[in-house]
Image 1 (cartoon, rainbow, N blue to C red):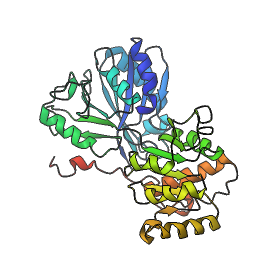
Image 2: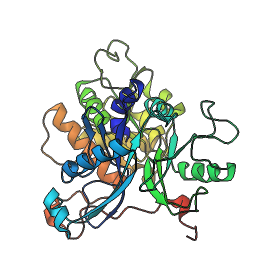
Image 3: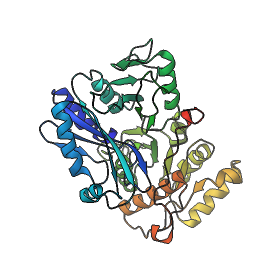
Length: 380
């Protein structure tokens, strides 16, 4: 829902009801993962997608029905069903979609959109109860005061402090995920509940205020990162030159990185190719928890960098984390093509993928979704 939350907030603010369709389960090959959402307003406007275009037409009609009577529905589409083939799900697999109405009765929906916009963690727990109006609970991370401080939730689906703690435990992974918890395992409900966790965006730090950095900002923001450009030169590190960046920071790169938030989803692109910036920066970066560290430059530049980093005490294991020369071999020439090459390598590294052409591989294109670790040991 994150990708359409701005539209939903606008509808909600002006008092326009809408139907929200969310993927809750998938089997075999499915074009979208659980959590993908599409919304239809009472005026007939549509935003989002749940299947990449396969079943949106059918869901539009279902959304109109939900808006008319206010009752939630669960729809299952499978490639083996004639109806599913009729609506276009010829890509294979099965997809289960939960469709519910969002009205002014969901009094905390505005809070959800505000927290998503502010890049603050929030979870929405929704009772999956076909034939009835949806009930929700909104859970914060326990560190902010915009939700009820005592129990940490708001909404019409009541949850105890212990149940809120369970949701927060699922939030601790730092990943934005959606999953279904069976009846009675999460909140006191006789029905399954859909848990949608909206974590802060993963961070992308781009060092060096150059034309390649501008392309990385545009592509990185499009790919769902919170992008920061960092450069020690104020004449180059300006908002006008990097409008797509979330943050433009004038600071020595290594000093910035010493205090910047870094976790296992953070990616770093060092594009300065200037030793006075690169060496102290990479010394910090290669000893951080960042998932990806890449540095631009020729092979000869890379060899000199490695020698200088070794003189600084950087170990071989730490150097093995460095992606340099940066990017995949795509034949990139322009800054925009180079940004595609770098983002492709970042994605390959984070997803532990092969980077090969799909036609060279066998088996499912998309691996099965992993079970949320917060519930991995639960007996249900």
